[in-house]
Amino acid sequence: MTKKRTISSGFLAIENDKGLRGVFSTVGAGVYSLSVHGKKLILQPTDKKVFLTSPQYFGKTVGRVIGRLPSHIFILHKEYDLLSSGDGICLHGGGDKDFAFKDFHGIVISEGNAVGVEFVYVSPDGECGFPGALTTKVTYLIPKDSNELIIRYEATTTKETIVSISNHIYWNIFSDENANGYRLTVHASRVGVFKEGTELIVDSKPVPKYLDYREGLLLKDSLDEIQKQEGEIKTLDHAFLFDRVDPSTPQVIVESPKARIECYTDYDGVNLYVDNTNSPVAFDNGELHDRRAIAIEPQCFPLDDRILVPGKTYRHEIRYRIIEKQ
Image (cartoon, rainbow, N blue to C red; front, side, top):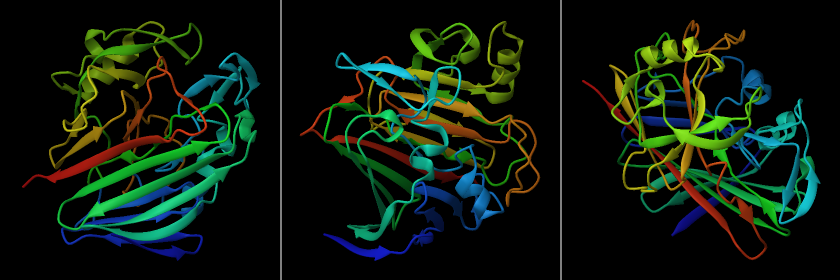
């Protein structure tokens, strides 16, 4: 049985009996902070206004379509012009007009052995150029007896449209100085290919050695190699196609000397991004420089069919398991 109560616009904290605590925002249906026993797991801007308005999408829900699309597209042979973020690209469904900056309606929920929050937003037909009124529900759950964050997405539409919703949490485990010392494992043997001169993904190819995380790689070594490659984008910001869809197995693992983060999902791909912008943002995590966090963004792989039609429901789930080390 699910119990619910409406909350006002703003921030809401929930926690379990194992020390996991999350603070969530109605704006962007976002995760402002996540900690275990008071130790921070994600980048947490000191100024909440920065969190709400930053173009870096800290912890926010991103959509209607996460990633980069051509701003002129076809959906079932119909032409649409999407809101352009520049250079003929629609970024994350509309740049500063996408889901990350919308105020969702919030509900506090109790579901079985979990506490959580549920956010709903109705994107009107034509918003950012996308067809159909899209009703989106984002649910965050924290089981009372295990340190997991579960994220569920549901969406319905009034017209044929495209949907691929995800979250842009930046993992910085227990206030590490940066992500160089993380070991990254990804169960993917194929990676997206960029259209020359852009970050639009137009194909896939076998992972090169420096992006082959199947057996785990130290992020510093991989990032250093990316920077050496001709034509590369100089950081990890790549889409990977999972070898198989298996939500019972962690598809992405980020491991530091302090903790292990396991990502389980029924999406068929993931974009991984290491933030090296050095944007002038103050974080409660402390002073951070270069490679200061990694974003794990499970999503529909760009080469797959992301079309949602009336009468069908878009459903996907992401589950993060946090395992502390002694």
